[in-house]
Image (cartoon, rainbow, N blue to C red; front, side, top):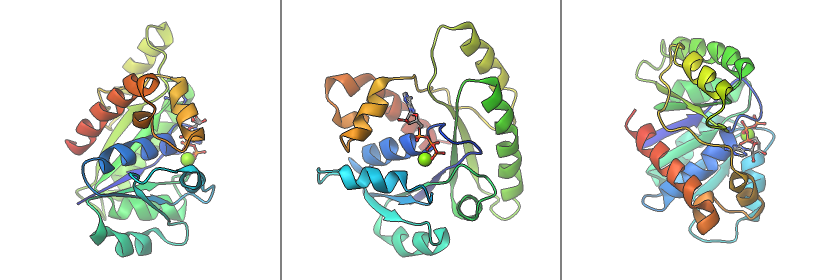
Length: 208
Ligand SMILES: Nc1ncnc2c1ncn2[C@@H]1O[C@H](COP(=O)(O)OP(=O)(O)OP(=O)(O)O)[C@@H](O)[C@H]1O
Ligand SMILES: [Mg+2]
């Protein structure tokens, strides 16, 4: 049983996108639940659009992350938590206290990398109470082969937190799948490359 929290200090970096796609793909092989701990309720909105049965169970955890984890952890193999974009929110702090792995999406831009320094510090601080906490930065919305991307990849490797060697490219299917209540892995041919990225990332996250 692994608890994986998607955390960060900025909005719009891909926490919900990663949580939804990783949860759906994990659920294809073992029971997976996804807790929406963000008062914006993005994951719950997506859950409203689902019309397939082979989906992860999704629950509202905004009222208390620890309580929701306690309630759902025994019914599932993987428990994922989609957190709000504030490190110091009650929900993110609670998730950091009890998760096994913190996944931190980062956009390939200097502003986002600077903001990630605070996330690395928060992980260090959380380890005082949760010493086995593991963490992995994931570069999302990469536009490969640009000079900026190369510079950013170098800069991010200077941070204290390890960086996943799998990067997620910027792809329309990550957006269009949400509208259809699906994950990229359920989008057929147009989602194939994205689904491969997610699959590779899952292997890395579980091996962290
Ligand atoms: N790899 C990608 N390629 C293209 N679009 C993406 C990708 N990842 C995320 N997006 C889009 O970027 C936007 C922000 O993503 P998302 O909502 O997952 O971020 P978030 O970190 O959960 O934001 P918030 O902090 O506001 O909850 C969404 O419109 C999403 O569809
Ligand atoms: Mg979100």
